[in-house]
Image 1: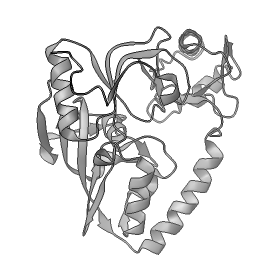
Image 2: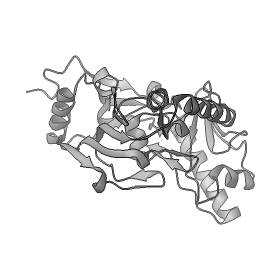
Image 3: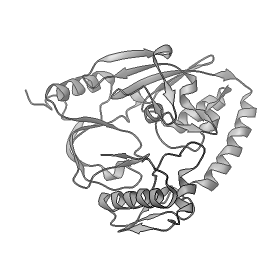
Length: 292
């Protein structure tokens, strides 16, 4: 039986990955799948795992760099409705892993459930946000997680309960291949109060983030109480370039890719910034961007 037998309608070969990332850089996936339901997803993962092919999941690609040479194995994209559902039951929200973080925030605010409004304006999907424990204003998404249903790299479905989960700065114990869905428990608050708070936060965040028209990605993790962008600024690296990629003046923790930029340009600039910050400030910057 062919590896793709029965799934030719949802798997493509040599699919360009650049359009699935914010930087719009990189080569193609050897195999690229967009399953329509959990059964298809599980079967594909099991097949590729048994054949010892690498398997990766791509979300919104906000902080992802794809190598120009491309990616071997299977890359999965969860965009079908089955992976993007939201259900509200009193103070509980169950959200599919492929759901946009912005949709989760908007739903919580509309339903009068407090907390997620702090995350307004942040990009990504629920799955990515939980993997990386997305945070803002001292609040992280892991705070509200009650449980999560996951799919392992071997294709086994599991349910992870709250007492088995751990969340810390920009990371979590949810390291499985796919977060299928997660349940959040939130506190009640008048929707009109949450809406006003969300609108104020949105205005502030828009003023701080690069224009959505730019091909820009967030590069480094903050160090304790010090912002990585401030360290890069103090090191005098605003506007530093490598090929067609440069450090953004308005927020030095973002790299902006120009026309014709390559992954090598990004990696070269990343190394330059790390080296210069280390030499000039004796600080070590750790990449926040995922590199394939």
